[in-house]
Length: 190
Length: 190
DNA sequence: TGCACCTATTCAACTCGTTGACTACACGAG
DNA sequence: CTCGTGTAGTCAACGAGTTGAATAGGTGCA
Image 1 (tube, rainbow over the protein chains, first blue to last red):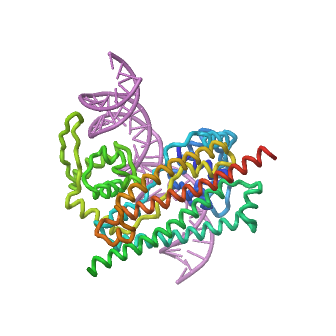
Image 2: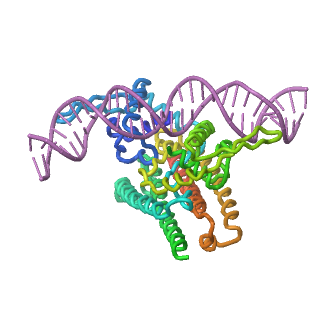
């Protein structure tokens, strides 16, 4: 029932097809909750069955038809109910890179270093995407002006969390690369 | 096969029972990869079957016996092989709190605020645990001295990542609480 | 004395999530 | 003209992960 809530959060941005959601739906919710197409289509079926969303078939020329889903009144109520629920336990983070780093002393230092470097690359890319999204949301205003305005602030807050996370990734990665280089040098040089 | 690698990373610290692992095993690997007891016992059985670990039964008085697992030579080799693997795609983070924040404009602001406050509390607690662990590892030395020494650096690097993550959690949470308070005031006050 | 909780493991049943392939049409490049 | 790519969705099968409970003795407290 967790994916369900993420889907509803995504649909607050407006109607979307299963395909849209599968592709990240403008990267909004996708950054802290993504799922595979099959999972989404399955869940969308169930949600429709439960009356949380409705589908609207859009006939398209030169493309397959698509079903655009949007929240029903019951769906909106479910969103409200979900946000009011007591928080479950603090998200178990699962990060394969960290498992490798933890194992690095018994493993292949250079391989781990390049895994970290790869992480840095897409952290950089993600940060750039976030920054563009931020500019689009701010639309020339300062952050204070944005928050004082009447728009939804939820997506902006999660955006800031994502940006901080990626910046952190970069800082840590840089440090870790240096420390591992130092260690590798110590091994080969003495 | 992902849990398997996390278990091996944990066993690099020394032998452990299923119960130890289930409880976080001195919080080492647990912070970026935890699993339920059932999952662990199942996986341990399989790993033993595959010759990656061996069990040693320890008879205990006034307690149920336990089986302590440790890595075999094949297990160590598997660790090395795993670290050398090309990295899979960048960890999908899944955070329920972020889903709630994303939905906050259509939800219950005060409830979300208290969910964030709760997150802050255990972030603080976790940071304190991390700091104690750090002191234990450093054992009076500076960080530079530690890295120059001969010990395993993997666990220390992941520890630093965890600490940065929790600090970030705290900063962001504080900011978010303020912004949401401001928004709540705007709603009730005009 | 009784109740609740801790150690240590196991069983059964379930849902969640992933992988891979498959249909079908359209568009553009070579 | 075919090959690859993008849109839009579905099916089958499996592995990962969760929930709830049972067992069985020991410890702490009131």
